[in-house]
Image (cartoon, rainbow, N blue to C red):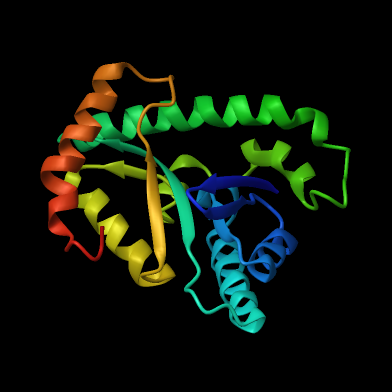
Amino acid sequence: AVRAVVGQQVFVATARSPQSCVAAAKAGHHLQTVPNAMSKAELGERIELFRSSWAAAGHTEPPRIHLSFPCVVSTDAHRARSAGRLDEERNTLAISAATKAWEHTTSSAYPGYEKLADIGLRDDFDVKVADDKLLVGTPDSVREQLERIGERLGDDITISLGIHSGHLPVECAEETLRLMAEHVLPKFTSDQV
């Protein structure tokens, strides 16, 4: 697992390993992950495992869980989905190519990471959007996705938005940021954002 230090807090990044979730919680480190790297059920299991391990370790401060989502927003639903699909396809190809060498390599330090190479065999774009793994659509539909994520995963999570992966024109990122700022985020109260 990769450790990211933010101020005095340490976040352990994990994409496949339940053991990393447990180790992070026991050590008092926070959790960072990418929902798109696992099934909806696996994500829920990892978060619950982290929370229960945190509680069992007796930490007095609350745990922090950070999730990162690719995000494409447009006033035109078809344009958002077309751009989101292209971005996801290119990201999937890049990750698959980068992790291909791990396909037959296992490590006790990174259990399950050999499965990252099969990312192209997992859910298709429409399933990922329906499962709220990709935030793609109109401002209203993305706001609804964020509401479902909060209801399903709890109010102790923070979210980062992958607005510009380099696969789409910068104008697409500008539109996404503007629509998020003007139409999506203002719908949430200050303690939700």
